[in-house]
Length: 243
Ligand SMILES: N[C@@H](CC(=O)c1ccccc1NC=O)C(=O)O
Image (cartoon, rainbow, N blue to C red; front, side, top):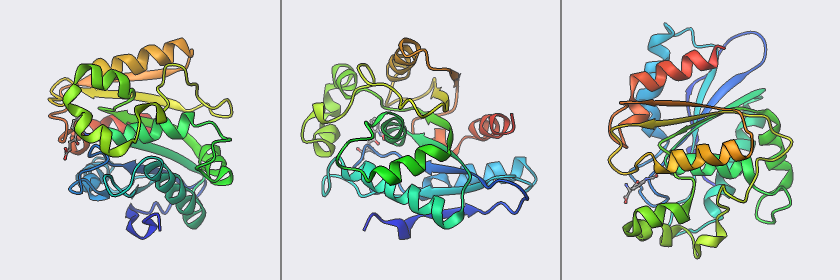
């Protein structure tokens, strides 16, 4: 069971027209049970407050099984399975993802997985990609190789999540599925004490090599685990969702 029953609905938009939604994907290095879909309780409150509860899109968060009990590809299988079920159940027409830390890693996997890969259901991946418009990637991990060069000690969690680092498709040498034209927002806090700008800068360099359109938002958004609660992030998301 890919934990669909742990999908959280923060807000169901009651507006005419297409059903727009943001789905949050939490971080926690694939291992931390204290990170759950409820990491986004505060961000959801901010979004509702700054829109005077007139938010014209729904807010959800999906869960996924964690390491060390489970390893890659379970995390991404669960995310794709839960997103596909959510799209069908809620009749979502426009999907926007916001991933924090390894939640951003999971978003990258959705964008870049080879559709013929044998560990995801092709129809589910196609459904998710067909609705995908924006990806907000906040204080993300994108390259495991680069991560372990910069922070060798982080192998304590990478080794629990992946039986070998090469099982993960580094952005350099990968590409975004040709069926996609997502708007990618690379976001990072200058105060992030767990991840320097190196991961985000690496990812931006790869997006440039791919000639992929993207936008960057760097700011003091607090420490690593404060970013996904920050009012300025909510303001940025609302502004960019309304363009
Ligand atoms: N809270 C995690 C650590 C963690 O989440 C983390 C540490 C360093 C860099 C990124 C991290 N999280 C990414 O999802 C732990 O329990 O070890």
